[in-house]
Length: 185
Image (cartoon, rainbow, N blue to C red; front, side):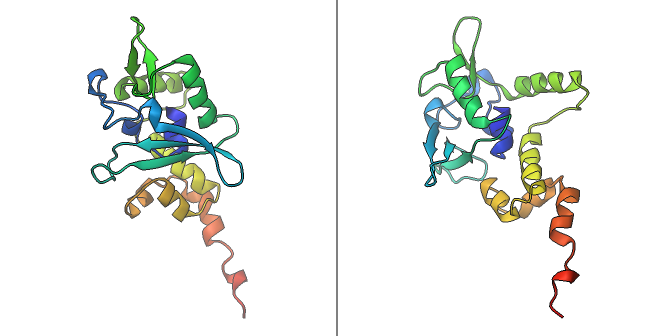
């Protein structure tokens, strides 16, 4: 769930629920909302169809597109999840088997607490829900991905995403540097 939230610039509430009993197929990702395919160039991707989102109109589905990544790959993580936690099409996408063998959705507070226990063990600070969305956007921008692509892929309806840009230093030189040398005198 963390890899999908990061690479898909998703809100953590889109990959988790507020409580175990809060899961509903009309609001949360299910196994049937995850689709694998190949683009026109034959490259693999995964598409997560969000049944509900903060920026979506009621009934509007927003799609998150994930592509292969070196090392920490969201496609491989989704495939492994399907093998490790077999579930039905209407079960939560991000889920686990509880002590009774029942499928349970990932609860946001517990997932963040677990992630933070791992991070703090290594002295890497802590994360909060928007860390994944902010981190994904910052990473893409630091790698010179066009800000408009980040804006569209992150499904921001306004320029509010500008407030999340934590990677200004790495991207400033590629966008602001050497402009005078480009002028034709």
